[in-house]
Length: 379
Picture 1 (spheres, rainbow, N blue to C red):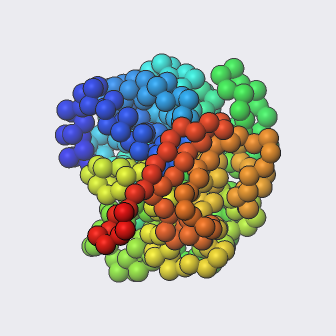
Picture 2 (cartoon, rainbow, N blue to C red; picture 1 turned 30 degrees about the vertical axis):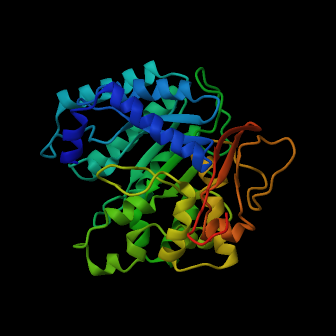
């Protein structure tokens, strides 16, 4: 975090635009037609990332639906020593509100990382409640990076209890809003690494019971979680699938209610948290086959859904009524990727090909070709 803050202090608009374009162009070539992009606010970067995000969203509007999340990675309520720091809190809250006011329309969610609060449960829950307050106030979704530190007490159930108090996040909510007519609002939870260390027989039953009737979506982030997994964590935690959310097991053991709400994604590309990878969601699949040690037909189909239609739902898109079979139906948006030379969906999961064609709204927006030559081939 300290090194990241040092890097942020040197951010320049031109560099942010160039790196943002590079990532978006690469994502579109991978087949991404919608992405949720977190733009951070804090005293070091002010609103610079938000402004760049809005510019890039407008620039790529015809080829990719970029859904911006105003996100605070730093604490909101605790100072550097875990104490109350009212001037700092006022500054952070002011930045968040200013970002949301300036980004009305382009911004679709607000989020935070409650685990960075240094004052314990009281501060973490204050963080969660404040973000949910903002989501309700602006009529947008909430997005939390939760339970990243596997050695600490989980806040997952506490968060769900807080969400249950708020009708705007209930599945059957039809509450009117001046700013957003899309109700109910959603709560997306990334990381949730503590789920990998709790007895599955108990946690999955309790989780699905508590989340019933709420718009809760859970996203595993294998690239970041495995890279940042600490070797000095207790052996019990290290043995639980490298302390990564077992998305396959969670979906298998969950009730019908949570099925379709578990997904996999990439939240960092080329930074100190995740230096590896190029943002290709399909590249997660061979990795997860190895991590979860499961290449059965049903699991491969589940993994494909988790990086496509289920990931889209977590990002705020309308869930497909037939998302369980990944088929294309007349009348639906023609946002899809064609995998050139891929003979079946098993190959798509086990060895995603490089060559692809990306369509957005039925229009080809990217092509990527593979050409191979080996010495001895006839010309």
